[in-house]
Amino acid sequence: MTTVRAVTPISVRYPEPNDSGAIRHLTLCRIEADDGTVGWGEAVTSWPDVCRATEAMIEGIAKELVVGRDPLDNVEIWRSCRRRAWWYGNRGGISSFALSAIDIALWDLKGRLLGVPVAQLLGGAHHDRLPAIASTHPSAASLEQEADRHARYVSELGYQGCKLGLGKRGEARLGSDIERDVELIRLLRERMGPGPMLMWDRGVNTLTWDASFAIRLTTALEEHGLTWIEEPFEPDDIDSFRRLKSRCSTLVASGEREWNVEGYRSFIATGVADVIGFDPGRAEGITGGRRVIELVEEAGVWFNAHAWSSAIVSAASLALSLTTPRALVFELKADENPMQHELVESPIGVSGGFVEALGGPGLGIDVRESVVDAYRFSP
Image (cartoon, rainbow, N blue to C red; front, side, top):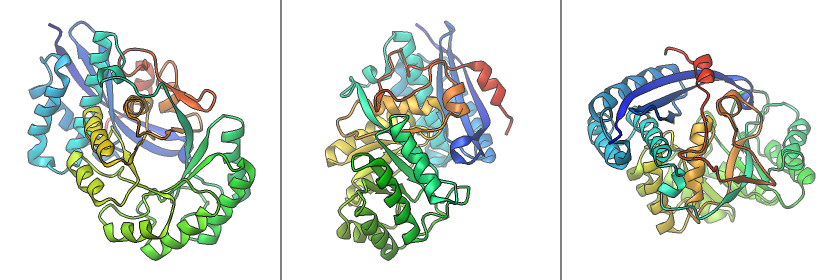
């Protein structure tokens, strides 16, 4: 029997070109079996203090419940880790980061040991590819410049649309002035034509929308072919979600800030979102994602995996998305960046407007440990 020999959390720090060069932080998880096979996982920890806490939790949980176990028993290991973390993370938090990183790495390791892709381990792929959209953060003060940039993602790189995340670094000043937002969408539609998808994402809680503002903005954007409006409110503002849903025809997307299946079950049951966002590097990994997909399929809504960190989470997100008929698109960062293009031997990319299933075993990516070491830091 193969057993887990070592579990190593590794935090990395890197500049993100897709976010105006902002320094971002992730906590990776390297799990090695006694035969030398390695699986990789990730938590989207974002801040140095969270990296530090997540590393400590991974080390503590792994020492007690992962090392010495058979990695083929990964779902039972997930259950054991979840029970241990209940005391300090019953509704999520840092414990979900730690569990996510361990779980993704175990799925990758299991697939490599068996020689099959994670999507096959999950029961098989429904899709062999998904339409690709460029997931971006506008930063320039000039709307013309931003419209030109995003149009090139479609015309030159082959993406089938763009999702614009607001409230980030730079001088774009989007998300607070309806006329300015609408003007950018108008310019984008003028350059892209009627076909490509366009999504508008409030993105961060530094932008606060009330129901009245969100209704006026969304109905104005709908005139230019909006595909969906994302995270318009904080997750607990269900009344505002209901008011928006009653007044707009576009899809409403939300959910990426939930922590576990219980949170998703409660949110999906409200009926206020058509597209459920999920990040395997935050909400209990691939095992958590499979359970959320079951809820999505039962409710007849759509699943949209968040993939805005490293190629590890992108590969995990892709594996999950390929397994369900309720996935519409797949998001990728449009500009080359260290954690997508340097980290792995063959970066995940767009081909003819689609992201194709990865062919290799496990997650289907080969992590360059020299790159991990180059960006490693001690939180």
